[in-house]
Amino acid sequence: MKKKVRFMETIHEDMDATSEAGEESSSSSLKLEWARQRLPLPAHWFLSAISTIQLDKNTCPPGASHRETYSEVPSNILEVAKSGLFFLLAVEALPTLSSEFCSPVKRVPVVWKLHAMSAALLSGMGVLEDEKSRDVYETLQNVYGEVLDEKKGSDMLAGDKGVECLKFASDETLVDQFSAESYGDMIFGRQVAMYLHKSVEVSVRLVAWNTLSNARVLELLPPLHKCLAKADGYLEPIEDNESILEAYSKSWVS
Image (cartoon, rainbow, N blue to C red; front, top):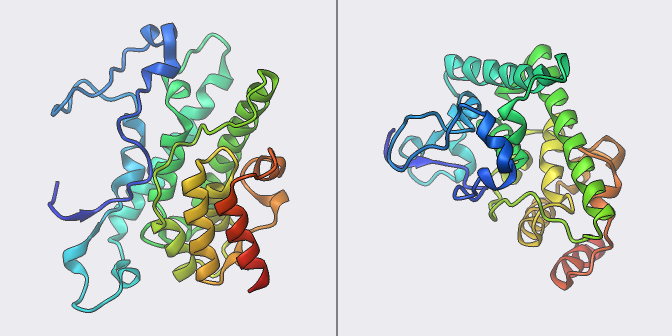
């Protein structure tokens, strides 16, 4: 890997995927990546192709803003990312073919999958430029939206109303890219709005909201009924964080 490469550091890479797998993880032949080794394959190996679009800071002209570093990405890299999205949709659909098929893909945290999909948009609108890849991307959003809805429902039944299953780290990279290049694209907007979901940590939601508000692009987000996951996932439980409420009120009066 090249040095000084721009990464989208929006998830906690030290998350233990085995914590969610439990005893069922023994049925999988995929193992977590060992320290400083490439083999055996990590459990999230199937996300690699989607995350190949990376930006080198050295390609940024002197004095250029970080938005201007999102230059054209080689078409072969975009094709790899598009193929990776299609492959991801295929492996997500496999368990629906047979109830006896136990896919290790289902036990990889959804936050890693959403992160990879976000990373594919770092270069701009490349992976959404044709109808086929747009359909694949939107379908994956719908799949993971259902996962979030199921998670929210199960946690509420268990009496846990303060769910934070999407443990991203604070990073406005994708949000800033949305304001710079998306022109209100619905699919891009759905991915950005996901960072405002109540399953996301407070600090991340606050950064996302302030970045959107400061760039004056809140109106480019899709309406709630078209967002990833159900609308109540963005509204419930009722917001009680003072910092976010203050950010809401500032945006409202401005």
